[in-house]
View 1 (cartoon, rainbow, N blue to C red):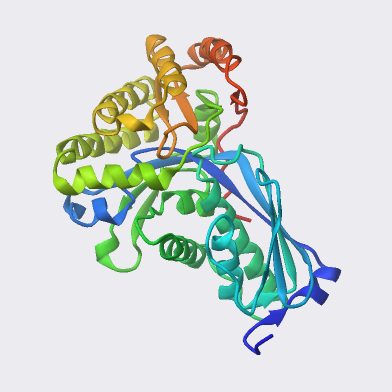
View 2 (spheres, helix red, strand yellow):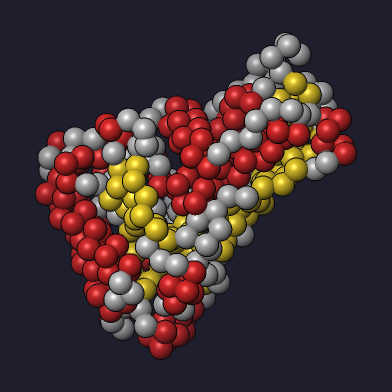
Length: 353
């Protein structure tokens, strides 16, 4: 190997390294993409997201010198690359690129997740954040410096945005790094930091919210890049921009309602955002997710697709008795769809670790 690469094999034979980070649900997603946030920075582009106890874990183990191997839940086969000239294309190119950035070889990256693969809960970004944390720990053991949370967020975002060819948001990585329930104001044009974070709930508030949410996987995986491109096009041409601005105002009010623990108002605002989203992002819904959201709204809850939708997961917000009743109705719908399921989880206060 070239001198810029360092073998991790011997260290990992002695000390396997682990890290993990939480997935998320969200409202106001897509505003974290620069194509939307930069032109309208004056209106305070905002996203609210909530880290879930569905964590993605990374374990670094030894492998052959000169090589890196990636193993991941949801993929039938591992992939091995010679680090002299690794490929950075899908499905694991993002992770090989990250190992290359740190300059290591001789390791296996084992990725396991509590959430289904491609479930629109920010899984790939969460895996990336956890991997960067693990590689940072490895570098520290080897005498280097570990990365702060701020640096992990910046690196995770820029690697993913670069390898994917642009139009990535930052909210998935942000939730994975910091955990908890946060409002993000995106300010990419203002230098460092590129976002302002406001923590909306303390631990007791997160417990209260956990009793009022329900999360389900539709059984259908999603492809966020394709969906996001069509949304960005609608925004850039001006065709859907008014709707995006209205939805941003609603999500800002949602953040206030959550902070004040005004749960009924928060559920109503989630319904309001979903109403706008049905107009400007209709491809976010498929029959089963549309049905789940309709059931939630019929019971007086709010509900929304996670991430870019197009399958993936949905989540609902309402008072505990309503959520209990909604769970039974959702279970009846999901029982007819292969792979669909309620995802038992709570708000996770802890970010990457």
